[in-house]
Length: 228
Image (cartoon, rainbow, N blue to C red; front, top):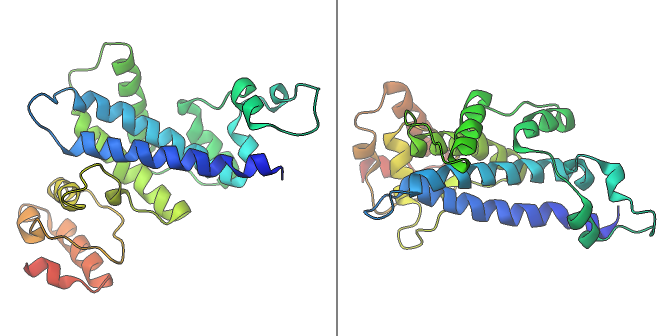
């Protein structure tokens, strides 16, 4: 494979993690003056999802992210230059990526219904007519933790809770939000929290959810976190 092509998955992945950090931040944190963050969380979440899906596709072969491979050939050189790919290449649209993922990997994305809801919301927001009956922060978190998180754990051994922009309090407030909303997430082996109490955050949760988080903490040997 041309060395230029081998750079593509890593370049996409770096941008994807940056977009995920912003998406988590805008979906979890809310302060006076930041009311627009609920809209921004959707656009950043969609951006992160698009980039992660393209990174997964590019892992199989970088050229598969482009819609028309023949348009990449300018008939002037035998080698592929990154600048020409950027200028001439057109990648698959967001709405088509689940089908491309299936064609390339043989697997369907998780929670396709949420994917479609976020796609519609993103399009509405971009055209200045955002729907009024949608909680955009909840939608963004659902997308991140039912679609992005399991995919990046499977393909890149990464954990969505670790990507945010609140560097002063670790992952605690992201985790607290997920616990209150009863969203499952990939739990790293070195998982730790210091600013919240898990038992307080899950006090109103269903028995099924409490059993899930207890099982995850038991798996990594951190049942002590339930007693702090």
